[in-house]
Length: 336
Ligand code: SF4
Image 1 (cartoon, rainbow, N blue to C red):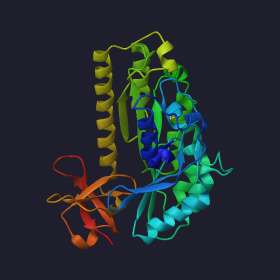
Image 2: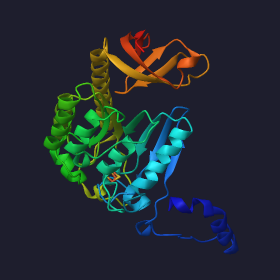
Image 3: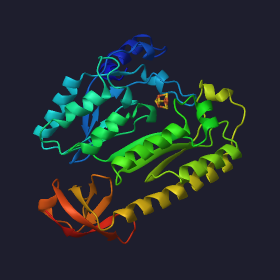
């Protein structure tokens, strides 16, 4: 268990006593029940708060449940305390992370929705982002709450993994494309400007050409802002290895390329739709010689010339056109 990392020297010592040969099993991952809250500073403006660890799902391609153990979490009170500490040290933005964060609360008799509401009340934190959340656990009540929350950003990251119902079944995912689509529509109906990032795996076993083409059509039709595309690689001891159809490496590469092209188009369309709109931007510490940049609440990357006193502050700005490299929008005017 990750909480035993600090004992590594003792374990090495034991191994040394065995003359360097042998294996020491500290705890079987399935038996790990403890959760160590942790909050790390990504850069000088953003913090990552781990609210949950482990997973009780068994997707056929994934080894995480074997490696990380069962789903577990700290209490809401502990998480609130962590957020208060971040606020006291000047942090403005917290990203909530975990292996399967929608499952938060299982081990403490609480819920992810209650965690969201409790964190929203912490003074000093300007923004929260919810990192990847399973579509079947992203409830309408969470979506409605984020839509009216002052602090939770209109930014979602949802793993789809495949846009083919047949492949989703082979993966043992707990939703189908209809449910996924309904979540995207729900988000957009209450937050038309929300950024939605979607994870996809291409080239999994069982993804025939027909199923891939179905996935392309499905993804193309979704009102989303970006795809995070992963190429499938085989993992020992996974159920997926029992599926017959194998996609060859060249084909996997082509499929990845195709999905990345769709992603680029979606991101460009989303950014274009935001030009001329007013959004809050939290400016970050730029790298030496680079222009100052920041992100809007709805995850648009924004660039403007360096102004020392704007770093780590939130400004309302009027979004301008694309920058020269096309990967950020410029600032037409700072409103306040
Ligand atoms: S893919 Fe995600 S939900 Fe599925 S088993 Fe792995 S960690 Fe759990």
